Length: 96
Figure 1 (cartoon, rainbow, N blue to C red):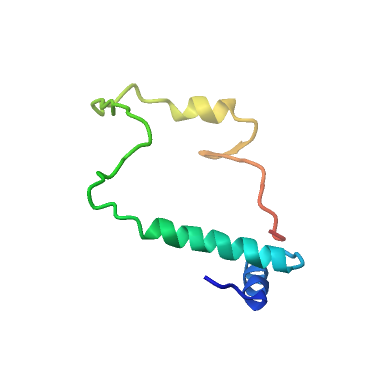
Figure 2 (figure 1 turned 120 degrees about the vertical axis):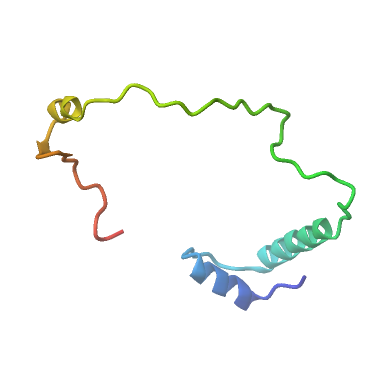
C-alpha cells in the first residue's frame, strides 16, 4: 500500500503528535502496511480460535454471599465524611 505525505500529516494531526515526515518514514510505514496486508491474506480456516495465549484452566467458584460489612465502620474510619458518604479529593482537573 502506498502512503502519501498528506496521509501522515492527517493521521499525526488526529493523533495529536507532531513530527517531520520524510521519505524513509513513508517507506517504513508503507512496508508495515504491506506486511499487515499479507497477514490478513493468510488462510486461517483450519485454525481453532484461542481464548488465551497460554493453556490455562478457568477456575469457577460459586457466588455465595459473605458477611455484610457495617457502613458505620467505614464512615468512622474515613478521613472525611458527610452524612452517609465518604468525601474524597477531586482528582480530575478541568483542563484535561
